[in-house]
Length: 108
Ligand SMILES: [Zn+2]
Image 1: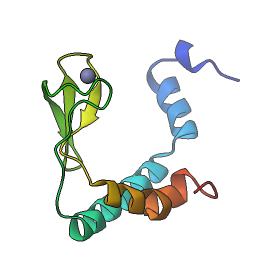
Image 2: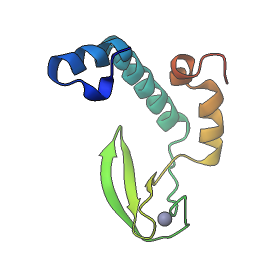
Image 3: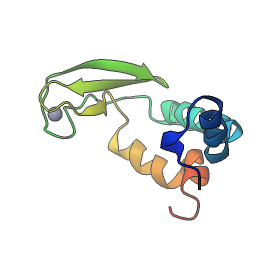
């Protein structure tokens, strides 16, 4: 088995393509965006939360991705999403999300 950590340049690109083909990345992004669109329509209200690790209300925006804001806790350095989906939306998403059909087949 090739050592991925000792590879570089085009060898690394080839290994990464074998492990995670670009085609699967595109399918994953498409399904993720479908799930987000549905959840935003079905559960339009997002809820602001404190740090999920230490419950601190002190944090700052680290970056935004796929329409969500990722925050960095000033207390413990954890990265978390806020505002985020409600508990009801999360409960809906995990057993029925399209992305789970690809990433967790047969598990949920
Ligand atoms: Zn924290």
